[in-house]
Length: 272
Image (cartoon, rainbow, N blue to C red):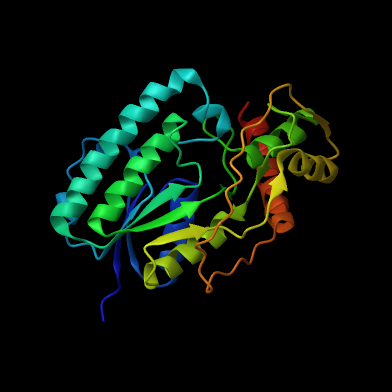
């Protein structure tokens, strides 16, 4: 029997890269379409019909980043515009080809923020087409620091490079964190299951300040809380699968990212 042919839209992002690796380990075929691989892979304008023979589509591509990116006013129009175009292009392809698919959404899907509005749009489109929606809380892993990077690698690089973690907020806000490798393994379980709407998280809450303190202790850094009140959406997951497993503890994940951060900074020094 031929291996499943997976079309991974956004396969070079944090979650997408982990998913592509896991699918390949399972012996499945993977086609990665991501604008990070070149402008010819821009899904807002790309013709996807060359891939109409795919067995499954993973719709992970999105204009997204960490809190500093999603809350910056200068980015909001682009987030709305880009994600609307992605929806129109990708969902039209899925409607016409009838390929089974999974759409990556978020517990921040909310009409009170621009990013959340676009995810609500994607969720509704997914429901109407009979696709599956996987709702993330916070998926983490190593990312090079930048405008779009997320809180854990940002804290780690600050701690290693400057000996301090300068937080945007007071840190009382809470998040749920799962490692990208655990996310990838459980995404495949969602594909194989019958549920169309699934919360992909472990149900454990951690404060951002608590997270900063753990990283500071591991790196010998100091923590400097910020003045702003952090945004939180305390929505408890209710649609988790009994088959979910989480193999990477938060401590193990933080240790991995600290080691990646050390390698990144050492390479940065060599290139200077």
